[in-house]
Length: 112
Image (tube, rainbow, N blue to C red; front, top):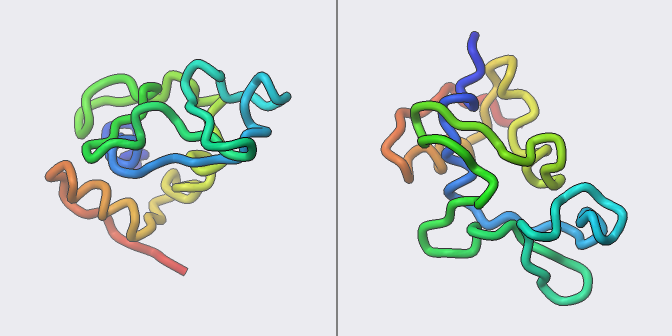
């Protein structure tokens, strides 16, 4: 099965992405500081994900057609953990909630 994440991108334009500030490059992590806003001392969030219609600034391409992450190798832990099994066809229900926000059909869910 082809990885539908490469044409979807709905999760990158559906959820707020908050992560520990230690993941920022200025704190020894890998997430570029320029793509994050600090939330107090301990947390940060990816720019663009804190809106009524979120879209991560690192998301490139057109949702539902062809997408890629501009910081894929530097992405924060919530992005790394969201769909690690998507490549083998296991999708979480949160994936379909994101897809529904963008009018995309659901994928088979394997939760738990």
